[in-house]
Image (cartoon, rainbow, N blue to C red):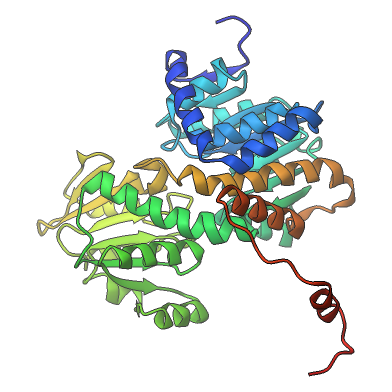
Length: 423
């Protein structure tokens, strides 16, 4: 294939299959499609180079298409080795001419080689999914960081890392917390993670949740989604938390709240969604039931202490089903780890439905446009997405669903903007 952009993908022969799947996802992403059409006319990214470290899925491909339509020079690498769809990566290169560095199940060295390849384009702006790209810029690739004007981060875990960098004065450019928009964390995190996590558990294990005890570690937006969907499937849900306010909310939502050490002996399925490390550790594995299932829906593979589990096992890991590894302990108990402890909804399934990612990636696209226009006015640190972008995405999404909101009357506008009217 002549004139292909720089790339490292598994098999370009998969490109036609990938394009079909990308176009299928596009059908459920009408908001992003409208943005892509406008970008193709207005070309807001002409002369702009963007490096992105994201899950290489059909939905991400449609975001890349929108940015490319706007004139952006793009380099994409994967933010998780198990989430890469090889046919999507091939299509991005061969069908859409986008430089892509991603192979499913690549090892750690290959993962960072791909990040470095994306950074070799000397980007003016970066898109990140978990902060690995930004972290690499500030550590191993300081030769590139001076040319970066700004970035976007779309995950809770990434925003946590960025805020810590900002607190320590280490972050050298502004990064917009796209994750923190209402249309991202309320819908992507809650409805997307809730559905896709259970989808992954079902694909991997074919287990029946009804009547089982599901332990959800963390009651942020992602945890709420997993807990509510599990309850809807007939499970008895236990929530573990470190934040007393969130724990109280979980209790008032009707869930049992326990420390993990008390939940460990009664759980049938465990799902971590905290953004922190070592949430499930050796002392929990020691108490777990035979056949207990462990899944992580937090971004990085550190929430479940896989090394501790492997160290306790006398046999395994043995792949017994799709993305399901069995570890046998000395007393004969078999503990099941999904997707190697990595992000389960993308490691064992396809991630969020395209209809949810439509909003998240519309936020990304519009924020990128705003950032290219306003980066000079922003100081290094974590920046919030302008409210009007979030509201516009929600408004257009409603319209594509055939729904609409009320509009304030002049009298209502006046009342809300006046302090002089009493009761």
